[in-house]
Length: 128
Image 1 (cartoon, rainbow, N blue to C red):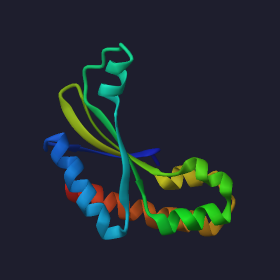
Image 2 (cartoon, rainbow, N blue to C red):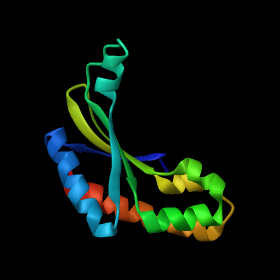
Image 3 (cartoon, rainbow, N blue to C red):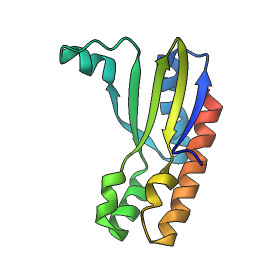
Image 4 (spheres, helix red, strand yellow):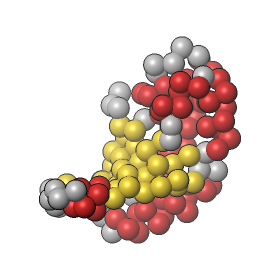
């Protein structure tokens, strides 16, 4: 299994971000922040030609559960979704929570990771 779930989109990247933000609410997730790497790198004097935005998304109740079970797992939070273009194609990519949580020995968290991942993939696939 791949570390990511990546799909192509024909939509405008800003529209994808707006749609993702709205659809994530269905599963009690919100966008904490959107990092614009093209802008960030430009401000550092580096040219980066493609648009690349990273959405940090979180469900507060699930984050609380993970942190209470094992504070070290906070290093894996929040979930991240990239919306970007490469070679004139546009993509939406999720870092799979199950891949990140596979390092945890707590099986209950692994199942939570599967549920989170399945819900996030469903949202991404509905937006693409």
